[in-house]
Amino acid sequence: DAVKEIFGRWRKALRDAADSGVASGELRPDADVDQLVFEILALQAAANSRIEVADETATERAARAVRKRLAHGG
Image (cartoon, rainbow, N blue to C red; front, side, top):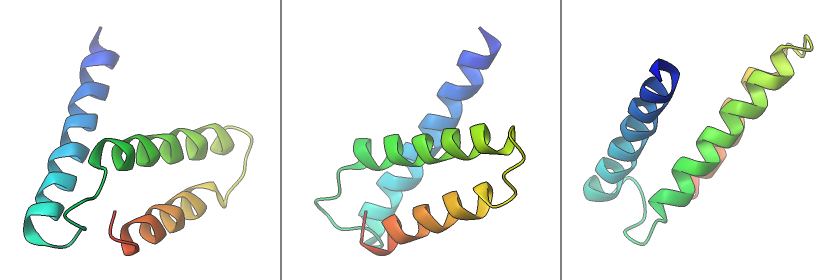
């Protein structure tokens, strides 16, 4: 239950940040915020799974993918 709660808070924080980005104009007004949050969480999960097999580039690859996605306006 605790893990589920923490994950929910993290997902909400990402959603709030994305909504803020849309409101401030940093993200496109038509950005699919739910999809953006899903993709960020998926990239995080992928990086976590690669770290377990000693892929030292996983975190940077995931960060690069998120930056690229955000650079396109969400």
